Length: 177
Image (tube, rainbow, N blue to C red; front, side, top):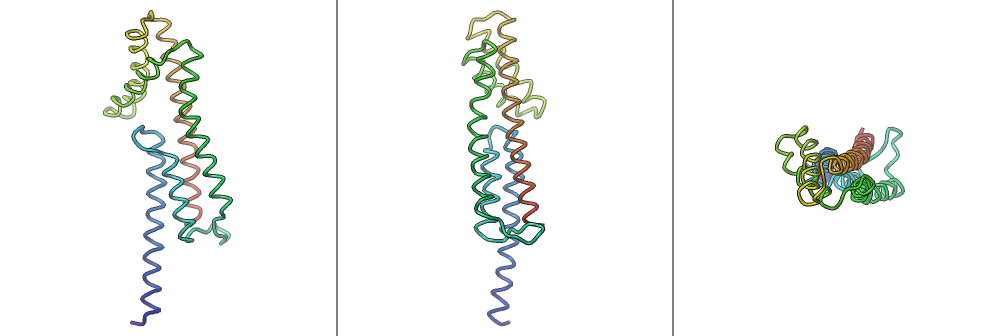
């Protein structure tokens, strides 16, 4: 077998390997936008980065991915990551909640992973409610209001992350098709 042919086959295998890694990064990114243990949108963006660096990504028109596309998605990922931390605190604050509600929501979410996906939602809500009542020394109605705010902030942040991760995953698929 000639060295050109061997090199060509090696490049084909590398293209396939990079493509599989990019798709896996996209899938993990979507899952990570919902599961708190994984960094969703940044992992999705790494899938795009792999395609850009290796040069194996082209869209339906045969055009390669541009640096502009990569930078725009990086900015979107950075903004969404910041929003994901700010929004739950903001929603909790405007509904009268304290840091206890925020921390309780996170703890309930982590515990609720065992009973995914309903456990995550209920765990987040109950964690905020019980923490606000116990540590925040609030009555049931103010604690409930804070829990609803914390829960809505969690849903909003998770929703935005999921939308961005799905869009990036779609971009990965477009550049591989």
